[in-house]
Image (cartoon, rainbow, N blue to C red; front, top):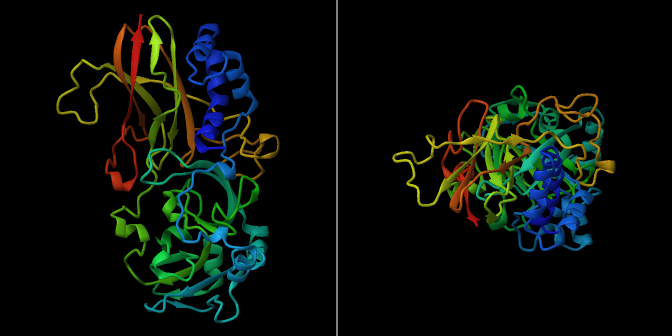
Length: 416
């Protein structure tokens, strides 16, 4: 199923409940203005049949590199190079080009590399599960929303008995023995060893939505950095290196990217009718990525195309924005989970499987509204977020290379 279709199915469950709550007029408007080429009733039936929030593994958007792609190699080759659970090995070593000191390096050369069975032994005591949205910092929409499981990276680092002169953690994925294909990233050692309050740990991830991580998703083991963009969560992980280097080594640093950027809070449209008849309620829906600043509001602004924009106000802070409804957490989480029910012990969920706070940072939130009373004409419709610090998108970090967070716009025509 293409990602756009899957996202549509994910979105319909929460928005359908919202519009039903608005009453018959809202529900009727939702049917009238659906953009799919099916009958009104079959559209609703289809939406109700696949109620999902999490993205199935196969339906994630994919940003990948490698020639050939590692997961497409023949099974015998994947087993030989350690890209299956039975043969996966991880080197956790000191950087030979720095003065970092560790007492127990885990390495293939030393005959004691870290194995998948060893990872599972650690998982018996230390496994964690948490929700995270996966986003590329140069793409305007999320790649997918997942429930990820793994072991905090710090548990493995402590097994190497680190001693001194360690400032960063470098890590690499499999690259077909071609240095030009190497994909690498890094983190400050402090972020790996300690989590800020309310944040999740950096982890060695082996499951997505309760199932083993597929090769396409970076399995058997990938890095997962909860507060960052996707390029930090390196796939097909094979090497972790402790270093005293003070500079990052990230592949994307050479592409002018801000390689230490936290996820930003931003909003995007989903259902955005291009035309409507005057007097009819117009349903508009979307989703918000909840970044490090959290999410307090989603807002919308409808402006006639022939009306002059505010002067000296590039981010439209003086525009007459209106709040829309942020929808509650789903009752069916989807993503292939049995009965759409989350597993136990998901971080920041209570014993009844309910989130302790909603929206949650580093996840997805749905929103919806009905536009009413708009006269005949052509309009620009924009949406934005307000984070928990009261800062409106695209601030506080409007720079493109630190993650996309532009204010989205679409055109709406109201006809007689």
